[in-house]
Length: 315
Image 1 (cartoon, helix red, strand yellow):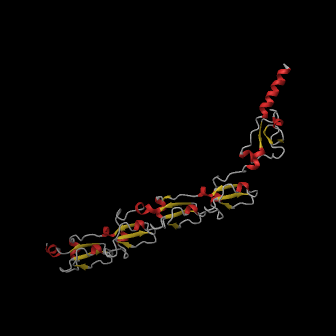
Image 2 (tube, helix red, strand yellow):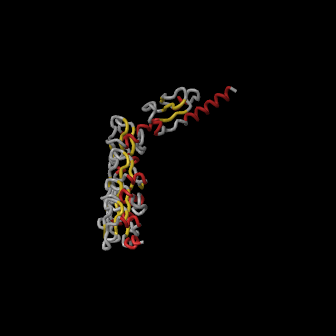
Image 3 (tube, helix red, strand yellow):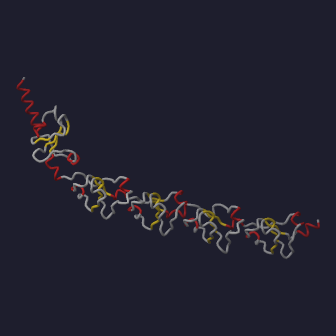
């Protein structure tokens, strides 16, 4: 029985003697063994211990796993293909894409290299990342972003957060490379999605404003934003213009002059040659021979045709 136990122990010793494989990259980063004692105990009572002979760890009580650190000096301590943290991505000292591998810990922090293997071999750097992981793509702007869009169709890419917020670029990749822009969007579709100048009639305050546009100046009027009261002949102009947040067609303000009522005829100041009378607004009691004149005037809110007044008053 004793002999059997001894034989089993010898067999187990042989198995364990072959069970100290080369340390992995992660293990190399933590083990302290090397030189004449490269065999490191990883787990068990002797974890962290070093030995010149793998057989030293062939005791399941004191060491349950081990590795050979003799090759660790030739292995990089870490890799630079890691994703950079938000703090590193947004730092003004972030490396440029031309040297994308950045040291993120140690005395070499913020150092840049063109080689992914450089920092793992440098003792002054304890971690690194690839700043290309920071790069953002500019997706289409949302409706809310379009409302505040300061960019034009020529420079449609807008930074939407970070110190560069609100700035524009013609390049889709520009903000992705800028550490001071955290997110961006493409405003190219804003012109067609923000609003329509023909969607709703102009409100009364626009129709009755002295700044109301005309067919001469352009019947599409900007009604909100820093470009308010601007005029254009094109219905697509204001939706694509970043300084305008809404618009309308002033032709919706126009009205016709129905026949005057008996009450209006009694106070009619007009002659048969100028039978159209403005009945409300600053131009009230004004007369015109053009049936469309008052309908196009911002300072006349209603009108009537007094042509039949003479016959009405005889009744």
